[in-house]
Image (cartoon, rainbow, N blue to C red; front, side, top):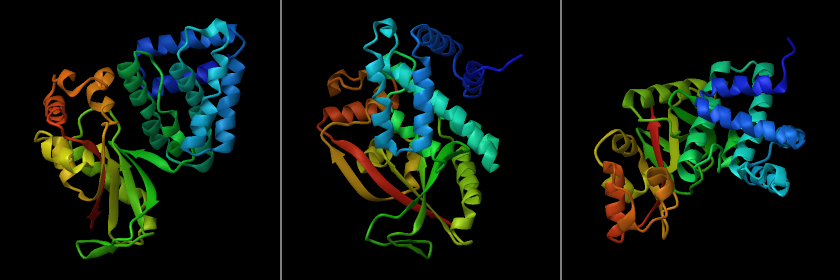
Length: 302
């Protein structure tokens, strides 16, 4: 039997563990695109992205070209977020081959691919459709600088601040190598899983630190100094407390509110849902006039 391109995408959707109804919805969108003779443009855009390997901003610019396809009345029922997801899925298929060519562990590819699942579900929660509204995010995966290692995602960066940071007898200076991390929305962040991820990252990047202490950083809404203070005791709070926060930025609008409140995140503080302890703590704080943003944290793992 001849293996088709769609067979390859179905295989990816299975590896990403997409929900069955999401797969059906995506397949129906592909059917419409093929009927409208636009599927070729989707695959061409996937190739274009992977050939140019753009940064996040350029990736967003390329994806915006899908808006032109929407002018075709035959695909009015397909959301722009679904279109972008399908383009990005094609990028992952190309990336899979590159992993194989470079001899990279395929379990890391599969773990990283699952971020498509997490972003798909975020889009469903916020906008009510299967797709993604953060297409720019995937550039780090596509240029093979960001990897899922256990529960967390990691990438090498350089320490950006003039002010030195010292911990456990080790000093970090501007330009020094650090491991930046991200927390995918894949469920609770259990302490054992976090420790395992740190260990995997230390092993994966050990050659970059010459046998010395490994330095981890994170830039996140979780590390807003007031967020750390107000969130309930639990896994998230204990994780955040691991970091020394060296920069904090407040904003008039809590732009990461969608991560906590989903589709209701733009409501006035008094109208925000309070279904969980975290939602209640944040909504109450905002209603009292508090401001949230994000912070840059760091710690040394010796």
